[in-house]
Image (cartoon, rainbow, N blue to C red):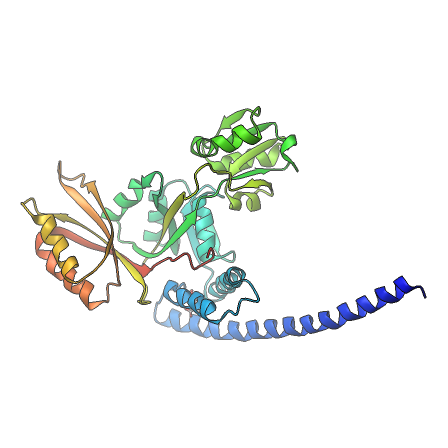
Length: 372
Ligand SMILES: C=C(O[C@@H]1C=C(C(=O)O)C=C[C@H]1O)C(=O)O
């Protein structure tokens, strides 16, 4: 036997020895997941008996926090969270295969937000409009819906705000997503790309990158970034500027990622459902109101929040559409609707409002779900 062969043999023995240990651990992981599934089914039964929602964002937030507190760092925390995202997704499915409606088409950033929040085991339905997503949840064609609410560059999504005026759905979760643009193609390298397709906004946001790397390639506008990905799926010389989700859905190579000229393009999405989740201790509450037409009314409304030291994280005004020059205010505050001080502030403003509607309390997204 030559020296090389002998070495190879020793290496393969060593590898087998370690791999056997890994397999033992894998079997234990499987066993533990089976045990976990049994308990999840028990939770599901109790929820069914008491008509509680099968998806519990408050509980999931606590699990992500538990991961942060317990991880020692040997295995990346981000990956642990991704794994737990999928464990919980499969678990929800064991309780009840939920349907999640979102502003489509497939592979939009809203789709990406939905998957980040609910994982891959649930049933997703793309809708053509924000209104359709609200209607799906309202009429129980979907258990939850996902819609965009604001973008750090383009501002608030008025369609979504306006839907809350009439709708009875509640905000149950929020999701922040970094809008990262990617160059996706069936081609294996940039030299093979002969055309770039995308939504005009995305083309605009990646102008410098395109000028630098593909200056002579013609650009074509599409109605959505997802539509561009669909075109790239069919044509090997085409590339799309689209989301990471689009690369997975349409089987495209990521030729370049993070190609946007300006970083810090963040979109906030809301999950809507029927029931307000319980308090986690780190929550936000959203409500809307319109004020009586009198001097100092808005001042009177803000005062009780100041007195209770409640942080208002956003205040947005919209025309009420019922009366000219009357306005509806949309407010996000820190805290949960069960908090005594928030209840105190809300009870004090009632006298000054024409209408006051609580839109929901939900765990604050500290980007702890996937992205940290
Ligand atoms: C099991 C539950 O249901 C769902 C699944 C979870 C899990 O797998 O840990 C956590 C929260 C819920 O979205 C629960 O509420 O505890």
